Amino acid sequence: MYDYLIVGAGLFGAVFAREATDHGKKCLVIDKRDHIGGNIYTKEIEGINVHMYGAHIFHTSNKKVWDYVNRFATFNRYTNSPVAYYKGEVYNMPFNMNTFSRLWGVFTPAEAKAKIEEQVREAGITEPQNLEEQAISLVGRDIYEKLVCGYTEKQWGRRAKELPSFIIKRLPVRFTYDNNYFNDKYQGIPEGGYTKMVEALLEGIDVQLSCDYFSDREKFNSMAKKVLFTGMIDEYYNYVYGELEYRSLRFESEVLDCDNYQGNAVVNYTEYEVPYTRIIEHKHFEFGTQEKTVITREYPATWKKGDEPYYPMNDDKNNELYKKYKALGDSEENVIFGGRLGMYKYFDMHHIVDEALKLAENELE
Image (tube, rainbow, N blue to C red; front, side, top):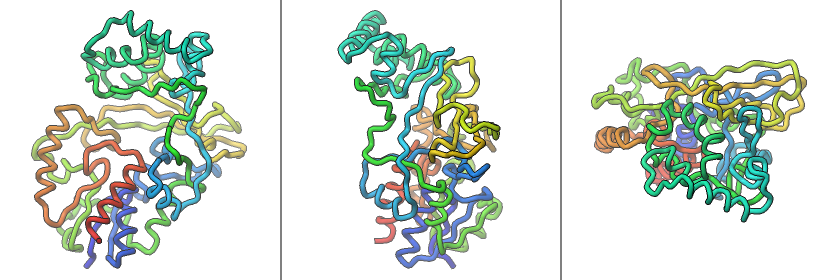
């Protein structure tokens, strides 16, 4: 008999399992995949730690979270500075003075602000009714058309005019020559990859992989006093109220016989006509000097049952549907729902760690 059955060996499940174990509880972690780490899983290819489910950069201003993850990994000094490629032109991200200088030939923040304000006035949008109008009202038409529109439409699978304005209520605009994408105090990548960090979190804890909870949930439930479920909450309840919507991703990776393909870890492709949203060159996350390189093209995809769900579609319709499932979850005595899929909310990694620690504190203290 275990105290906790934890369904999902991703970051949320691993942090909770670690905390429960350190409080004297006995845990069993299971995962339907053949590896631990969930979507932050890294696999060594040609001596390079490849982010198998997309780029993951740890960043936070929460010292408690930063100190916690540093117990299980040594983080390097990687700073996320993606660039955007649009029809042969390259721009720095997030939108900052380097972007504006390249785009308009301006030099001072005052010139950049004046250019944006001019385009916003020309648009004449007072109450944005959709994502396109919201974006133009924030950053003007040039930035919207070159760096926002195509990428966003690919990401969400809908035209910008069909997307609600709240998705893009705020765009990062920085009037300094600073290409650091995040404003957080702490940032980096675990040396040796995320899998190594999750291994440290799960040290001494029983783990079963390639193990589908739904294949025999009665048996699994009988093995523990409580269940922490980090999968899709609608699947847990057999879609009784209908399916929640997600966006999925497809990855195409290849090994190249060169030491440096694109000169940056992440290059966004903002043209709608380019089917992928970005190319990731993994060695740059850890300042690699290997003779070969590994790149991954990331393609957004419409989610259907059986696909891997990556992004909850948190529009009004889906949020209302989630409330029904959450009410069912709240009525459970021996089942807890956690993580991006269990809580139907997009979390960055630092949010996941924080949420798992809060749950552990409530459960174990």
